[in-house]
Length: 192
Length: 72
Image (cartoon, rainbow over all chains, first blue to last red; front, top):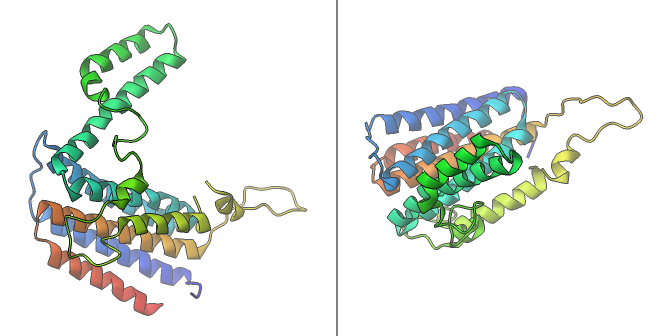
């Protein structure tokens, strides 16, 4: 592919911005009320909000000419898509709740790390006590603090699950595994 | 960060080091396309799962953006 000029790249950035704006307007017009304390309601929308923000951040970097750095940021989008696809694919309530509860595991991890490096600190000790009182019941459900799902416990495995929610979707939409592999290959070649 | 990403900023030998900016327009293009591609996918997923009925609107936005590829 030929090298695009700065002016051409600006046109692409404008088009991407316009696309995001139109999508935002479309969903805002629906006047959706996210249900309180219902993970199946909140999880998809929090992913979507973050996707809009990352997209905007990528375009900001692109405007400044930082393409390689912007591609690194795109990785989050890939991970979010694979995660969201798996959560919404089947057994949605359980998966969405697991995702939400994993925050407890991360809080526990953060408090314990704080204590590890602040040995003897009353604040750190209290932080661990607080987190354990409030979140232990949820944190205990996880074997690892690194990944939110116990089984499967990595993105590649999540991506391998056959498409159920949108069975009529044609490739590559119905093949998250392929998308994952493709993105990893792209990263190997280009950056991050 | 892989070695290949660092290769982009390999310092010039034989001259004093400076943290010189290196920008590659090709990566800018790739980032725009990938980020927008994933945004579409996430939007489609949320729409399908929450049964919002936005598929026609999303489709129109995707097609509009796809027209850009004809300019390459």
